[in-house]
Figure 1 (cartoon, rainbow over the protein chains, first blue to last red):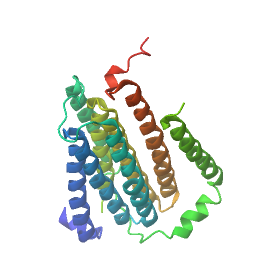
Figure 2 (cartoon, rainbow over the protein chains, first blue to last red):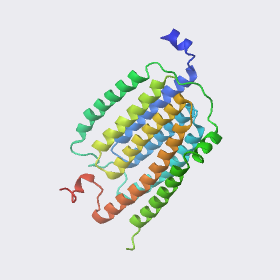
Figure 3 (cartoon, rainbow over the protein chains, first blue to last red):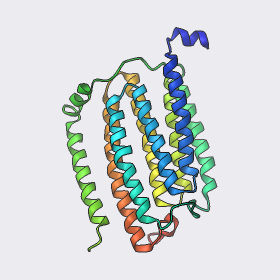
Figure 4 (cartoon, one colour):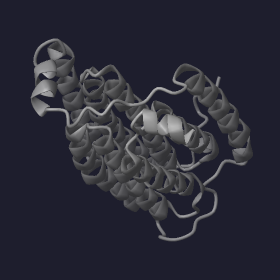
Length: 174
Length: 99
């Protein structure tokens, strides 16, 4: 195992960083789905999203990491906190956050995880992620403005429609 | 770094998100679980981009981020409207459209 790792020139520091961040992320994600406090769930979700951004940097995707921080931690979390504030009377522990049949989710999740893990390990047994260095943002923008231009424009229309739809749904004077 | 590590982390996050969608009754918490699922998929896309050596996976991940932002905006507006009409966002009470 160690000899093989050395022959594949695995970056130890990168692996240790990945492991620590991954453990934090899994703990935080479990807290999101188990905590009895909605505000705490939102704050644990911030930790998961920050961990995802850190993993993107480890995977040489700086621009996606920056967008992750800006969009998720900056915008989506503020939306979530506003949603919690506007839909809840009290801050603190709350009853009735779970369905009566919540325990059904555990076997479903475990079976799904087993299936996914089996497929992944079967397909990518010993593949090592290549060390490619940071992705130039120019390469990303070249893709966006050439072969992915039509989806890009469609995406801007989706965002516009979503913004208008959210305003129409949420406004009071109707 | 092994490719399996990355993809397994994505799988674990995905399953936690699926559990949250099944177990939670509060609509805002279900939306948070959906965010977990979308982020798990994004991790996979980034890992595939690294394996293939192209940026196409990162382009897809950016699309997912944008769509997720739109989804959260519309979703929370809908939750807000449901709360305004019923003073509750428990999903199992929304059964008017049951056949």
